[in-house]
Length: 102
Image (cartoon, rainbow, N blue to C red):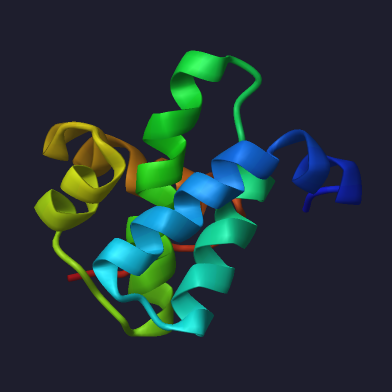
């Protein structure tokens, strides 16, 4: 869980999340899930935030049933597909959620 001040401290990142979500045409539910995941797992190190943002978008879309490919999400955020692939399960785990079993 996150605190309200986490939202304020990460306003720029949440704006970037919204921009990427617009590019991906994600619905509101997927955006909300992605923002919740990001704020619940946001790292302290600035350089890691973009990777967590991408993983949160991918996982949020999965949870909301508005799935996008890892490559598409990575491109919208400006990271490598491998970054999304390596991080999305960790984001779910850190948020206390179980990843899907495919």
